[in-house]
Image 1: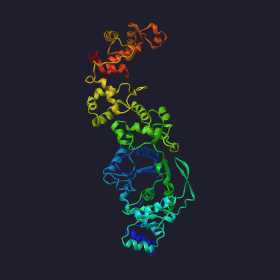
Image 2: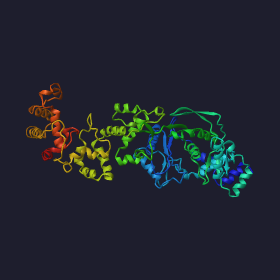
Image 3: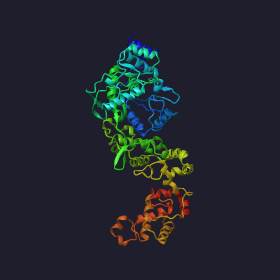
Image 4: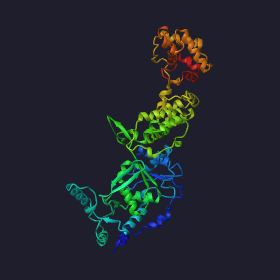
Amino acid sequence: MDNKDLANLIFPNVKGTEYYEEKYKERNLPEGAIVTRFAPSPTGFVHIGGIYQSLIAKLMTKENGVFFVRIEDTDQKREVEGGTEEILEALKDFDLSPDEYIDENNIDHGDYGPYKQSLRKDIYQSYAKKLLEEGKAYPCFCTPEDLEKIRNDQEKAKERTGYYGKWTKCRNMPVDMAIEKIKNGDPYIVRFKSPGNPDKKIKHKDVIKGSVDFPENDQDIVIIKSDGLPTYHFAHLVDDHLMGTTMVIRADEWLASVPLHLQLFYVAGFKAPKYAHISPMMKTDGEGKRKLSKRKDPESAVGYYKEEGIPKDSVLEYLMNIANSNFEIWRKQNPDKSMYEFDFDIKKMSVSGALFDMVKMLDVSKNVISRYSAEKVYNEAYVWAKEYDEELKQMLDNKEYSLRVLGIERGNSKPRKDIAKWSDIKHSIYYMYSEKFDKNGEFEYQKISDKEEIEKIVKTYFEKYYNENDDKETWFNKMKDLAEELGYSREVKEYKANPDSYKGHVGDISTVIRVKLTGRSNTPDLYEIMKVLGTSEIKNRI
């Protein structure tokens, strides 16, 4: 009996690896084109870090490359129904749909599938069989109790825990004995036989982290579990080899796995991909920082942004700020360009972790929305309102009027920046709708608070100066004329130079008109507001 007999006993009916090598031929891509993937588990929660990772993958593959999604569902206890669909929907929502993937009906879109690990069981077993035949893997019959005793003994001896070296009970078991145990029905798993020596170092150059030194791996890890499915590490080896992955972009929690993964590629005789480990998103917590948490931080879930009405463009632009700090300057210089025209450099990503700041994201979002047309704001806000805010939806049902409202201070050199998310819109436009406006409300008129003076300003303006046909310059000059007539300076700087000579300035006058018509002292352009309200509604309010 030899290793081939053992391999045939464990995996009697699998195809040889040559079949898969022929089936999944090397990708025919231009030199330098990158192939990378997003490889989530379908656990029902898509983390914003997954969108971040997918964005980086999309950026790295935009020049003739390939971005694919591989569903890693070998830990089927954690899988939730609809998990794959939720992942794909999240990517679609953020315009990050992959080039290749498996859909919710298990239909592959691409030539290198199945793109779901649970459907690749025969492929993994083929490559595990080859390692068994070559003496690079072996069956392990250790029970949970055996492994617990090994761990306890290691801790007592103050040695590293794990299955390695002298602690590997089954590593050197004679083939005949292993075959007899299997035939007797003894449960087992398949382990990788590591050739590593922890006293030796390997040098690795990570795309983001730079040069890193590690001890060699000497752990005999499990590669095939008792259910016949692979562990993450072994599936990673087989899939990235056959799918032609050239760069693995993943969270830096996997950095410690690099020695093992490189060793697996080396032992299997495959070319290893490059690795780029993304630092975690951090959040301020008191005086310190911590990782963005699924449990503590609602913004860690991609569903949060949809519920709040934060546009996908805003989220992606903020993530670009995190990815490359010079993106913010580029955006100011190129306000109308697609962010994908930015010269992204993965080597400029933070090696220590970027701060995830919702206040900063909302500031970015205000800038993003300020560049939208009224039509785009209306369309996206209406879709959001239909699902999350019935009152706003009813306000927006009058599309023609709503477009005029949302068009105020939009499309000029200094557009309004008072909307960060669609859930802000109702508050920001409430006063423009007659049925919502409380004309008898208790308004704060700022500097001018005397009721008689307020009524005098309003009455004089609308009886003597107001004309709905005035252009903006004429309108503002009339506001200055009103100020002068009532003892206020025509210019703010005149008032500041001689404050004792005037009651106030033209800005104070316009504030009274603004508050009277809107109930607010801070609004977008008053002239545009008045044009949209129209004479009839203005008269109703005064």
